[in-house]
Amino acid sequence: MTKLRVYELAKELGISSKKLIETLEDLDVVVKNHMSTIDDDIAKLVTELIEEESGKSNKKKAAQASDDKKAEPADKEEKKVLTAKNEKAEDKQKTITVPSKISVKDLGALLGIEPVKIIKRLMNYGLMVNINAEIDFESAKKIANEFDVDIVEEKQDNEEFMLEEVDDPKDLKPRPPVVTVMGHVDHGKTSLLDAIRQTNVTQQEAGGITQHIGASEVEVNGKKIVFLDTPGHEAFTAMRARGAKVTDIAILVVAADDGVMPQTVEALNHAKAADIPIIVAINKIDKPNANPERIKQQLSDYGLIPEEWGGDTIFVNVSAKARIGIEQLLEMILLVAEMQELKANYNCRARGVIIEAKLDKGRGPIATVLVQRGTLKLGDGIVAGTAYGKVRALFDSHGKRIKSAGPSTPVEVLGLSEVPTAGDILLAVSSEKEAKSISDERKNLQKEPEYDTPQRISLDKLFEKM
Ligand code: GTP
Ligand code: MG
Image (tube, rainbow, N blue to C red; front, side):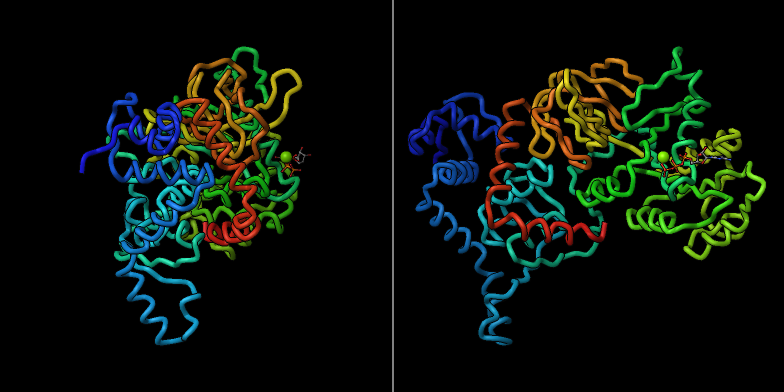
């Protein structure tokens, strides 16, 4: 079959070549001009997209039917089994076996869903893919579940639970650890962070005043550590619920004169659920009634067993007030970080998490973003939730203007259209225009009643395990 040229397909669809090229760009398909040829499956995909946009459904049905046909083998078998059990079983959830890596196109064929719908759902998860991109099983499962289909993995060798593009190991370079301080009310989280910052302030900056941006960076023995300023349990949970693992190490602060309290347990459960290593900082050891041994005993009941008792949890006695043990705590953080071999790709489009965001009277929406992957640059098109825009200015954790921010860098970002929600994923895309179209897409999805409430509930459930 001869391939269609852009202008030919545009004519067929009754739209301008320009509009078609824009739509192709939205799908991550780059074409040079109106004379470029388009692959058949891309042509089909873009046709569906355009027709869906213009509200025509005739051809869509045909496409659906042809997809259904492809899905027939799996489908038929499945139906046979189900019918044997129950006449009405067809209405029940289908179960389909899929490989641990599957392309969007193949998944669409197996599920009998138009690939464009899958691409849209993936966009919602912050994953920009084209029709031929391979996605991992967990992502495929989430998508399938949204369409009321359950899928099982063909091979059980893929344990990664990441909605992320996979990097080639050779593109990966070391990145600083990101640390969160957690613990019960008044046990000294803020004081400890202050102590850490001040211990290092002289090496950091001349003025000694750190602008508060919800995160800070300190340097120990030439190595950087990033601290998130106590996002609090809610924000932490929100971030996890969105599938974003923001922290590499959790510091669990427990006051030596108080002991393990409900929020201590809550915090350690969060960290455990997210599979984040915990370093226990027994704080306030300057107090006369401090009893660090009792804390160790209490935490042992929760599986945090000190090394000297044969366990593998690092405990450090500190006093934020008297500045005792701070250096040792920092060294332990670096030690744990070293064991994690934290790496990231610096040379790709940025992806980050909104740590906090606010509306500034003069400067508009300001978001503190922790860049996790790639490098965020001035001028990049960006989208976070339904907020979109272009990076107008970047400020580092010391309030200094910078031009770009790589992995594990907390950075203040100016240029979003609205204030995003903490925990939202920020994505750099090819242009502000693309950012806007993703945002529009998301707004539309939010409007679609069929996905509104049920989707939210099922999403929470889907991420529950994380
Ligand atoms: P919330 O943010 O309210 O949850 O509290 P927090 O955990 O951030 O505790 P914060 O740092 O505000 O400290 C609570 C109180 O404990 C303050 O009065 C601190 O001065 C005091 N404090 C913190 N660390 C120490 C310490 O090492 N020794 C002593 N003696 N007091 C401390
Ligand atoms: Mg505090």
